[in-house]
Length: 276
Image (cartoon, rainbow, N blue to C red; front, side, top):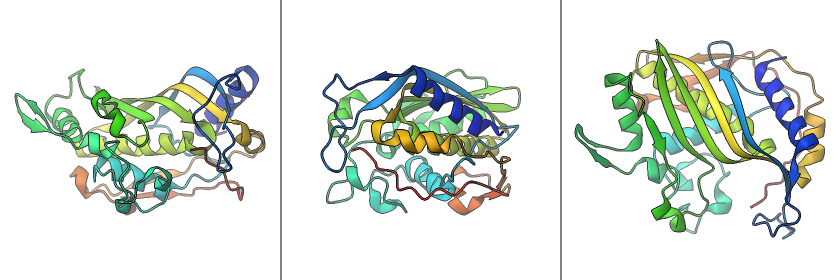
């Protein structure tokens, strides 16, 4: 069984068997019909993915690889907060009439800050430090800006990345305050694994480990039967990640710079309801 599938199955079983329900609370999320979207959750899940061993994409069901990468590039490369710059509709529910999701995600990464070396936004500061100060223990991003929360249409879920160079390996910790296990768990793992590969390649390093820290890992009530079916499916071998190794500039990567070789997965035709 490949690692991504094993971790996903173990997490979901743990949540279903040992999790805590929020049905006694007045929850914020609602289903499309207005019904409260309750969850069963576990607090404080930590998963480790060794990117030298395999690329951590689910095979229990398909993860839309290109769409996941496209959203990551929308945030980290385009530094956009407008859905008109995105090639999918996953953010439409949170966008206003202009397409904006407020001062969230890409907007925060793109804000420049003053340092003794000059002005950088958060992404360019990471790139600068990986190339010039790889031993630094201060290479991180954080988009949970309290001053701007009231102008965000959705508070950031995946809110910080801490990068760390150990030998010739680039490792990173992804901190996430909230995780919809069915809709978003492997989606985020795929995105930030690709980000580590990108940052490593342009810095002359090798991708090492992604550590994924989830504060509130939850399964929505209407997702439970879907999860219960998915985790019984056959696991396939992990695909091989192929990257255009001629790219040396972070901003030259495109969705087509990444390919999965021999990605086998089980068919999944269920439309997953999303709570908003």
